Structures are given as structure tokens and as C-alpha cells.
Length: 93
Image 1 (cartoon, one colour):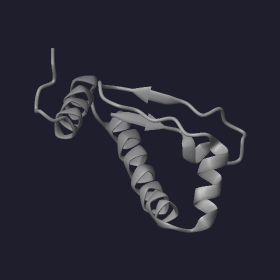
Image 2 (image 1 turned 45 degrees about the vertical axis):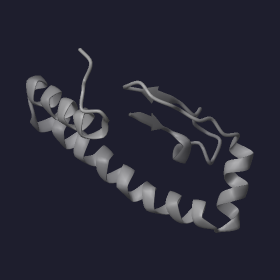
Image 3 (image 1 turned 90 degrees about the vertical axis):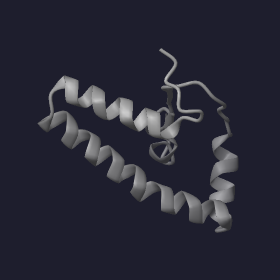
């Protein structure tokens, strides 16, 4: 699972960062290419606009989890989310 701050870096105020929480492939793209593709209004722009509210919802749910649950419960949530996103279903401890 990789979280990327690309949506925060459009204005150039925040340095983009990525955090990898599990193994797999990752891709890097220059911001100029990303902006150009978004400006074209094609499939990439539609997917990015669909992705943004989903990411905001995920961040809000995570913040609520941190506020209302114990550390053990937060770990359980993280393990379940990680397990749901991995194929094959092996956490590799």
C-alpha cells in the first residue's frame, strides 16, 4: 500500500512524499506530465477526480479511528486494511 501526497503538491507548497507500507511496484511521474494530463480532461482527470474524495474519506475515517480507538484497535484496523489489499493473502511476518 502506498500513500502519495500528489494531490497536495499541485500548488507547489508542499513537498510531495510517498510512504510504502508493503512491498510491490511503484511509479514516479514528473509533476509537469501529471498537470498536462489532468488539463486534457481525459480518463486520467476523471480517475483523479474520483480518487480524491475517496482519499479524503479514508483520511477522515483514519483520524476518527485515532481519536476514538485504542492502539490495539488501531493496529487491528491497519492489519485488516493491509490484508484486504494484498494478494496473495499473506502478511509475511
